[in-house]
Image (cartoon, rainbow, N blue to C red):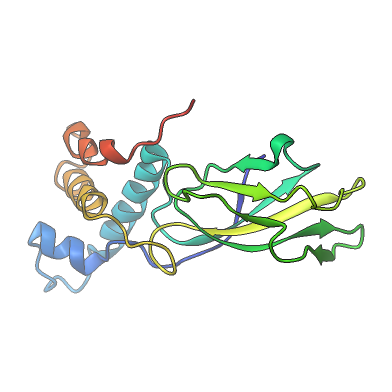
Length: 184
């Protein structure tokens, strides 16, 4: 099961203006550095998402399953999990028959143990694919981005801007260490 991002926020958790202020770079240059700064923010955010196993921008994800998970618990690699958008069965024509509310719901801890709980009364898919869409990520309707992760984005982007690959940025990545999710 691999969640596919189907909709994402176009807004990064740190703006170019925030990074300019952090770097103390004038905006008098006519914005010639803005493209580079935006690329650095995006790259750093993506690397921190991998490092922390958390989603730093809000988005919608689709999960396709051949059947219900044993025990009715489906762990998801999406943290923080914000909402269940819909759950249903995919028909051969591409339509989705939506399941009744309450048959699939968010688990008790959507940040540290994101999972979906399936009611034992959920109907058998009978050979149909189960489609589940969830909203996940910091910002938007989810929880705000924790300040240490925001600072990690600024520090890592600043290090990459100043050194352009000359020095490792392991010290700044330590800011994200408390948010790292471990696999069992």
